[in-house]
Image 1 (spheres, rainbow, N blue to C red):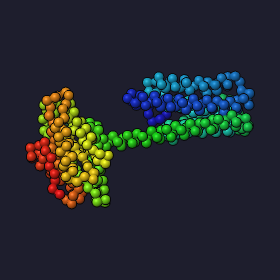
Image 2: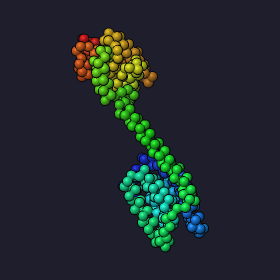
Image 3: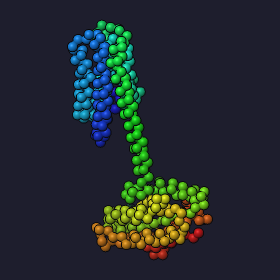
Image 4: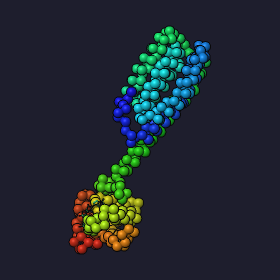
Length: 355
Ligand SMILES: Nc1nc2c(ncn2[C@@H]2O[C@H](COP(=O)(O)OP(=O)(O)OP(=O)(O)O)[C@@H](O)[C@H]2O)c(=O)[nH]1
């Protein structure tokens, strides 16, 4: 089986495991359904007994449903499904022997069962299942008297055709679906790793990149940008007096005000506990000061439903990408110095760095 075993069962991933079982159920129903005709062509030519037909019918149409029920009701569906896949290989080995190695359906069965295993558990899983398949094939060959009739007639080839065409396409389609899902999830992960979960703004990680990219862009295209650094005044007191939940609501409100002010080309980030940054593209320091003043007033005017008496203010430092800022770090230092001055002015104020 795979590297995992029953004791490694993780209940928190039960939904994911059930999806896996459902996916394999669809593939098994399709593969064994068409496989029935591939093997059936040989049984027909051999004038097989009714029990051979009953066994083939059971494997082709009853086993997929039984395997699904066994796996989906198991305590560990994923482990159980891997066991079912092993049983698929063993049964495939038996049918190859029963067909006396009729070359086209035997090769088809071996290839399709191998492709399945690689898709689900990689080469290691294939090696294990292929070993079990070979052993089962040998045992059945001995049990049925070592019959060997490799020639495939036109009837047998025709009976194999639907399996030959439909199943590889189903495997490719499933692989394509999975690949697209991985790409989607990677995009989501990249987004999450750059998003602040409390406010939905960009986080510090993204901010560092955005600030450097803006500096480079401005230097190359001779454009201007302004950095607006915002810090909530006496936020510790808000937390201490009203509690962290209200503190969080204040941070979300500040973020909301910034998001509304930001244009498509601007970047709003939460870069620290109660510290925010807004990069305004194509904006000089004077215009940025006016925008900062509007932000300051909007936050001062904000009211909170749960605590109507709460007043919240911010101090803001503004710095343009003037001659004194060559790097993002320098730009940040200038804005920080301006913010410090705004705090010194008594808070709830805007200060602009000297150009
Ligand atoms: N509610 C809440 N509080 C946070 C969060 N992150 C940081 N803080 C708190 O934010 C407070 C920041 O306070 P300080 O940096 O001391 O500054 P301040 O009280 O705003 O004082 P001044 O900036 O000088 O006006 C600290 O008490 C942190 O515990 C958060 O996600 N939620």
